Image 1 (cartoon, rainbow, N blue to C red):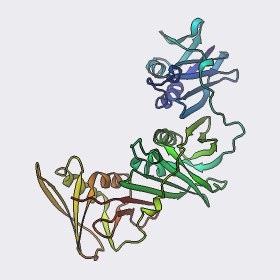
Image 2 (tube, rainbow, N blue to C red):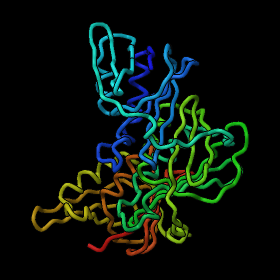
Image 3 (cartoon, rainbow, N blue to C red):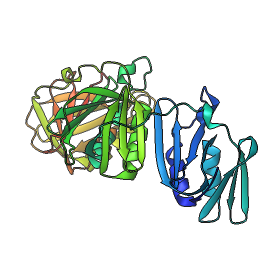
Image 4 (tube, rainbow, N blue to C red):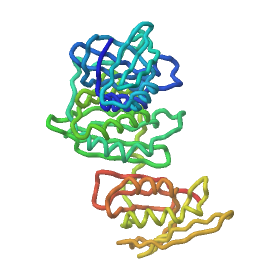
Length: 371
């Protein structure tokens, strides 16, 4: 196999698959990237860990078609260090892969592509156009609350459901907080209704990285138990979690007796300050509400205490004392962008609900604490 490829394009393609290749893979070949040069002057760069698969094409001048697998991380480190604009790649005897660029030469030991797992294909698969920037925002505002408790696999991902009318909903929860987003994501053809699926945590990370790169013009579909996302010459396949997501709607308060409107950034900064003296284990901060006033309080027997009054709008719900994990609150406020947020509360041991002011696309539920 022989081909010449632009170094920057090659580097970008190899960078893309770094989250997939693993040195701890149960099969050594899964630490490798598959390179396949065709007579159509296309270079295929693909990698899989059997749960997530990246499959992409880039332009290359091929003189001898062929296929080989090479250690994905080493190849990436080598290619991005090369000094020139183009890389000459040649596969010789015993799967030795030689890379030449200006006056630099590297030889890497490859493995036969025959031992590489069969990769999924888009052939015959019907995809639906969607706005990748909308999906990216939905992921960004839900992925932070995915559970890391491996004993609850149905919480180890983001719930993804097509509601019809071009609307897509994403939900995640770790049992202490819940994030939900729902937006219209159509781009031309309608997005049909479909039952919800669970995208695993690693798949969410790689999908978010892909959407960061490709922008709005994407298409998606489902192949057996995989979510498929395609953008130009790049395809991502994510094996879905085979479990039932819990009935998250039971957690969301149907109504709230108390509503507070706050400036988002000042509220976030106040939480950061008060949390300094909160428990390092629980991050608990007490909130005292009275008409026209919110007070944040932390008290740590080993360190001291802190207290700060926060300006609020429109509260006349009577006195209330409630406590939350400040870290959870900060993470929610940190991924929002609106100037103001709304905090909806009931009783001291009832969940709190956070939204952007006058925006119904997203909601966040945080369970209260006893402190």
